[in-house]
Amino acid sequence: MKGDGGMRGQKPLFKLIVPAMLLMLAFPLLNLGKTSNPMPPEPKKAVAGEKEKHRKPAVKQSPAKVKAEANRSEKQAENEPVLTKADKELLAKLVHAEAKGEPFKGKVAVAEVVLNRVESEGFPDTVKEVIYQENQFQPVANGEINKPADVDAREAVDEALSNKKKITNALFFYNPEIATDQWIRTRPIISKIGNHAFTS
Image (tube, rainbow, N blue to C red):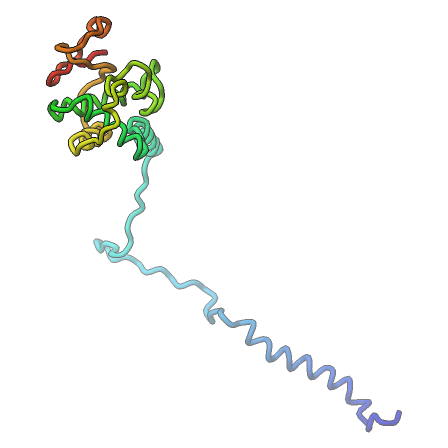
């Protein structure tokens, strides 16, 4: 054929050489990242009596301990009332109105009465509902609940919420000197703090 310039016999050789050269060039690329030693290095032997400096032993907890810690966390979460900022402020206003002039412990106990009611089956489930339940707290009826709380009342609420050491499990309190409701006087007194009697 014209135009092949006598290369006809050389084409098959060219077709063989080019792929062979490409393979030769590609072969070193296939080994990139591989070490020349296919065997992993032998681990260092510890010298007798020598402590490993950088390795910390894995601390394993028994399943019983893990479960106990989980239960403890759940109980803490159940025992710690969670209040909104508005609930805390409302409770502080009630403490201020009900326990003005009472010792700090008495103020904490008044806050605890409200929190005890929230946790009790016989009362509403929120601080606001407990405080505004009909005929329960005189400051709601006479408007004293609307006055701002003082620092002591706010601190008493924080103390009651911290649950470090509960002062009372009472659900009611009253001042025996001024209480007119005869029903409250029939309740068993748990403790007396300041001018208030705390009852179940």
